[in-house]
Image (tube, rainbow, N blue to C red; front, side, top):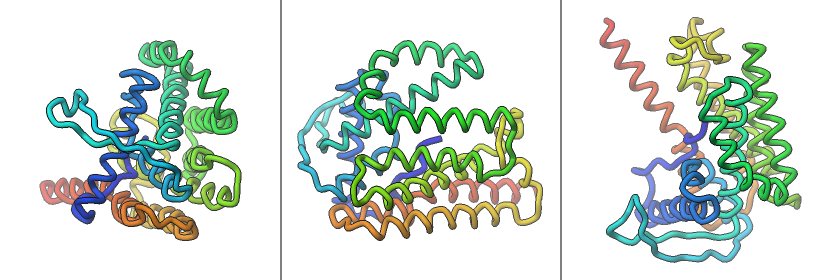
Length: 280
C-alpha cells in the first residue's frame, strides 16, 4: 500500500534530486544498521517524505557521509541522516511487522509467520520507544482488516483507518505542530488508500480480493469520480502542509505533494487509454 508518495523527477532540480536520493539512501542504510537486510526490505518512498517533512519543520542536525552498498558497489553514494531517519526506520519496521502479523492471523500465510518471528525481538524495542504510535498503528490495521472481513463497500471507512494510521505516524511529538501534522497525515493516508484501491482494482476484480471501489467501478464517470476524490484528499493535505513553516527542502516537498503523488495515477490512465484504444 506504500510507494505512492514520491517525487516527479523531471520537474525537480538536479541538486534537489540528489538531496532526495541522499535521504532515501540514508533511510536504507539506517534500516540496515538497525535491523539488518530484512529491515531494508521495508524501505518505502513514503517514509522518505515523512523524514524530509519533519526534518524541514524541526531543523535537526544532519549528518552526511559517503558509502558503498550492494546497489551501488562501485561508486560511493552520499547519504544524509538525522534523528528522523531513525524515526522513519522504526516506523517502517512497525508497519511491516503488523502487516506480516495480519497476513499470518487472517490468511495463515507462511511468509507472515516467518516475518513476524524474524522481526518480533526488534519490534519490542520500537514499541517501548514509541508506544503511542505503535498502539494506534496496530489498532487501525486491525480495523482495516475488519473492514475487509465485513466486505465494507463504503470507501470512507477503510480509508479513514489508514488516514488515522498516517496521522499518528506524522506526529513525532505532541507540540504546537501536532494538530496540523495530524490533519496532513490523515488526508495523505486517505489519498494513499484510495490510490492503492484504484491501482489494484482490475487485479482485485480478477482474483476476487477485497476492494471497496468494486461496488462503483461500473457506474458512469467512475474514473472521473476517483480523480475527484483523490484531488479532494490531496487538496486538504496540501492546505495543512502550507500552514507549516517549512523552508529547507520546500521545493522537494512541494514537488512530491503537488506532482509526485500523481505518478501512479498518470500511469494507470495511460494504460487504461491504451487498453480502450486496442479494444476499438
